[in-house]
Image (tube, rainbow, N blue to C red):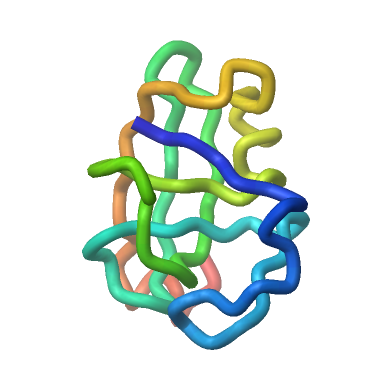
Length: 98
C-alpha cells in the first residue's frame, strides 16, 4: 500500500539527513536502504515512477510513503492511497544511469 505526504512536511529533516522536498521523487520505506532507488508501479493501471528512498516510514504500518510528486506521477493524489508493487533497483542499474 502506498500513501503520500506533501507540503505540510516540506523542509523537515528526513532519516537520511536531507530536507524533505514534496516536489522531489522520493519516498519513505521501513527497510530499503537510505539512498537506494526503487520502482513503484501502481497495481490498477501500471503507471510507474522511480523514487529515491530518503526516509523511514510509513507512519501507518507497512508499505511506502511517497512524496507528493511521486504520488502525482502515479495518480494517487485524490485517493490518498493505492495498491502498488515496489521493486528495489539493483545498484549496478543505479551506477549505469538506467
